[in-house]
Length: 453
Ligand code: UD1
Ligand code: CA
Image 1 (cartoon, protein in one colour):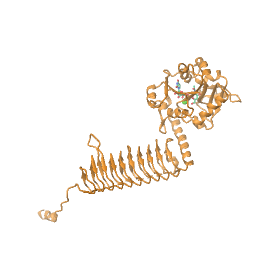
Image 2: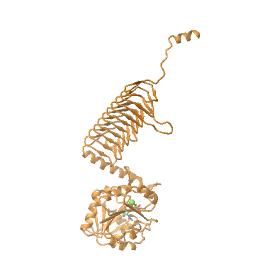
Image 3: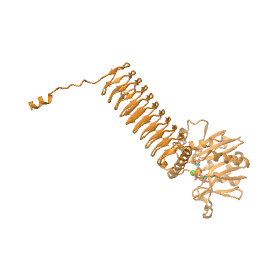
Image 4: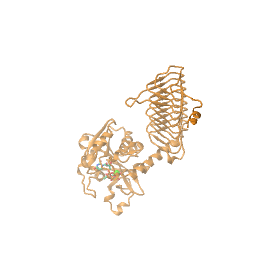
């Protein structure tokens, strides 16, 4: 049985931010959400977040995550002091405690599982994750015997120059036998360079404590400043892109593309340069996205093309073409084999199959049928300054260039709207509607004017 505790009370001074460090976003998810997610693979019986600095904000940001407990560390006196706060909450608990840092967001689930497995197999009092770094600066150094049994951890700031030469570092990820830890926690002392109660100090009082080297040292990167945040993003991007390329996705100029790790792509999708895929986006096989596009929380069917466009919270069915320069937002549904063209904005609207909105249009709160052709420059006037109104357009209807459809409005099936019309009343099936002033031609009018001059 394992309880997970995540350290998230620290101030994160080096971020120089008003936002608590653990709430900084890394590829669409906060640091702490990422830590929580990787720990979930262990099916913990409880998940406890230790909050302190800006506790209200941290709690509010995680309100919607189920089964989280918060424990407050009102004064931030160190990582050991933070874990001391758990004593009253885990009084009769007999299992293991996995301690994670809210600022170490790239840990793989497999790594945590491996750590806990080694801990159980060897019946250790504590097992901690370590790494051998060529530049160990800033991290606590781990001193072991030849059997990976830990003798001592010394913080960077407390190391002698010789101790600093040790490249084996503490990742800040520990699995403890809780009853053993609970006995030694109250005896921590703050006699060190930072005058803090250090959690790593417990290792010299526990027996045995084992160090497990992480295979990929990039996983244990701690985020203390903006440069490390950017480095973590690069690592994350490399992981995500390598995964999708191995799965049959073509990325043209991968360095110019960003893909959140929540996105799903099918084989034979092609992503062109300067394209960004975010949130819960799914793109099906044969689709070609970009260049220069942003797709967020959207589902694109098979063989869809999108170029130089922004698509958010929308669905585009198979075979449809979007762009260049289209903006789909706020729950748009584009049917199959449609064309949404140049300089077109669609908002909260539905297009039936084989419907075209090819040039310079705005459709808001509109439902169109199948095989509709929206002429160049057609605009729905859906907002009267107070309320939004709906426009319904039947199958096979065509609107002429530069028509204005004043909502609420229903155009039936196979209606023709004459170019330049402003339509304010419903139109029945199979009609031609013209709503513009008739053209007046006055022959010879110019000549007459000239003689008067
Ligand atoms: C810590 C370890 C160090 C390790 C490194 C790995 C200690 C003393 N040192 O150093 O050995 O190599 O992590 O990244 O533990 N926190 C609290 N309450 C506090 C202080 C900190 O909750 O009173 C939280 C922070 O919010 C953070 C985590 O604990 O999430 C680590 O604290 P931080 O100050 O970043 O420790 P490091 O100096 O990185
Ligand atoms: Ca840190």
